[in-house]
Image (cartoon, rainbow, N blue to C red; front, side):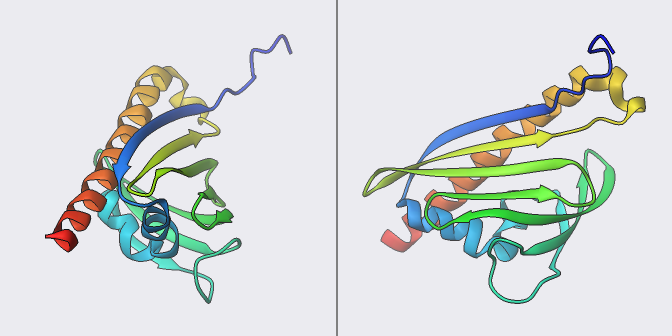
Length: 160
């Protein structure tokens, strides 16, 4: 009624140019998700795959996170898995989406764009929406920075 109850998602978006080929970047984020997700997101304290086989569309994982002192547990599902280009996972137990888009710039560089969407805020969190938006944007910026740092450090170590 009158749009008062319309929920707008809390969205954070960050992008960076990374020295390294897009297939390596995709493998780091997508294929090797279970090994690397806690590396680029140190808030992830526990991550377990709930489905068999390699990471693909339909893969479900359970994660335990500690964000700013708050412990949360959620199950997410991979809903898009496009090798070399994109991996998206969505919360099954909580309404969120993590979208990693990877573009080839040239043979030595790629671009990552990470979009995090918190699709619904509990009513008791509404008064803090502005702070939550700031925290979500900070988190997406930190995620992209961490991925860039890890990939470029590993590339430099392999080259040198």
